[in-house]
Image 1 (cartoon, rainbow, N blue to C red):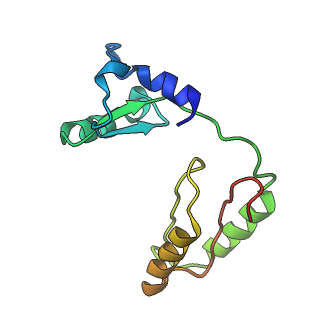
Image 2: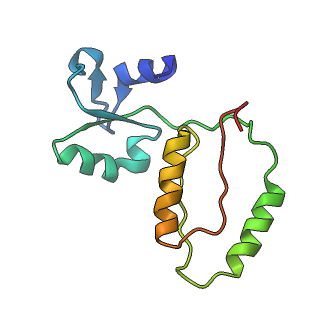
Image 3: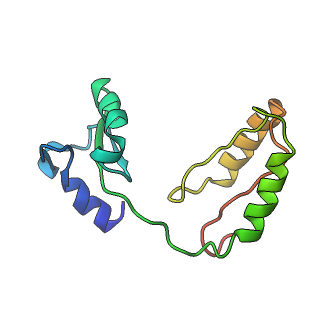
Amino acid sequence: MRDYEQAKMTHEVVDDAEVEVDKDNVTESDKFVLVHSSKSIDGKYMDYLCGTGQTKVVPIGTQSPEDDVGNLDNIDIELLEWLEKKTENSTVYVSFGSEYFLTKEEMEEVAYGLELRVLISYGLLGFKKGNK
């Protein structure tokens, strides 16, 4: 966990009434999810997860991703042209966000699952800076 995430987790406003999560109330045995969002944006989903009694949701605020991807304009155009040729409901979009990068084994497992369903014919992968 990054320093700023840990700091926000230990002292974060979790709802509009400004109820705070104290680090003393989060133990190693607690199940919790850190969410790059806020109660005002994704409140109903956070409430749902909390309502299951299985996990605590700790919003740590929104974050704009680092601009290390470069210019994707050409890829965007190519992807849109490709999508326009597909029939309706024939494409699945899978995203793990900009904060998580799949391991090689995880990529192979996702690709295998999609291949079994004959859903993939185009892939766009993001890599950590310096990894290919």
